[in-house]
Amino acid sequence: MARPKVAFVGTGGATKGVAHLGVLKAMEELGLKPDIYVGASKGRYFLGLPSAEQLASPGWLTSGLFSIDRFERYLRDKLPHNDFRQLDTPLFVTAADIDGRGRVVFGRGHIEDVPISEAVAASSCVPILFRPYKIGERYFIDGEVVRTLSMDVAVEAGADVVIVSNVYRPHVTRKGPSLARRGVAAVARQALNIVLSEKEKRGIDLLHQQFPHVTVLNVTPDLGEHSFTSRRESRKLLLRGYREALRVLAAAKRRGVFDVATTMRSVGEA
Image 1 (tube, rainbow, N blue to C red):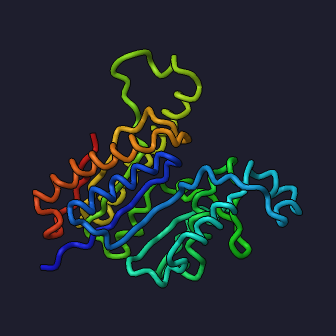
Image 2 (cartoon, rainbow, N blue to C red; image 1 turned 135 degrees about the vertical axis):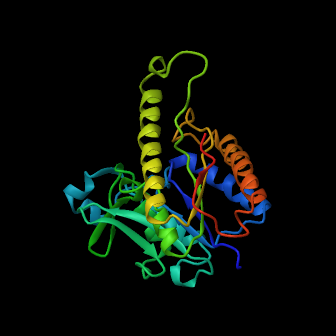
């Protein structure tokens, strides 16, 4: 029997998304090369000035604090390939149509004629922080507005094992003062972690029902107390993602999950 097809599905998480690199590093060390990549959001700290087109439209200009065009230009310059159709390994990026048309998937077999840099920019437009990103005649915002995880895209692309890298695990206070006593930023961060973590759980539950043959390995490092905006914690975030991935994936490898497809189960959630 052929080995199962493995997908890596990452949440967003702004600067917390650095933890995904730790998960990918652990996969590399364990000899687990993804056959499919799916992701949404990310992209903060590329805060740009409005474009001429945005300046000409007062409504669009006031729909967010910054333009994400600078991020798109950075990706356009740095990516070795900026065409979904040229990639050896399928990549799928999701965004949300601001005009109510739901989730949009960019990638092979979906919308594949849009440059990767533009798809990622669209997916990364955190509402209010960034103005919706225009592609053609449509406007897009953060892909996680619709779904925290687009695991179904990976399964439809043929995944038998889905490795989820989730940075939204809520912080559990075991010592010190309650989060209620740590200021508005701590409370807002925890509330966002709770909401998005619950969305993730519901997504996995739904996938259980729709695709019972698929195995989900849920890598959820303890990042709840860390900021979504600080770069100073990047090394710690990367290491936590790496160590949690080693724990979850090494255990799954010992059980033979990557040798044959097994009945789906969610593994790794604390």
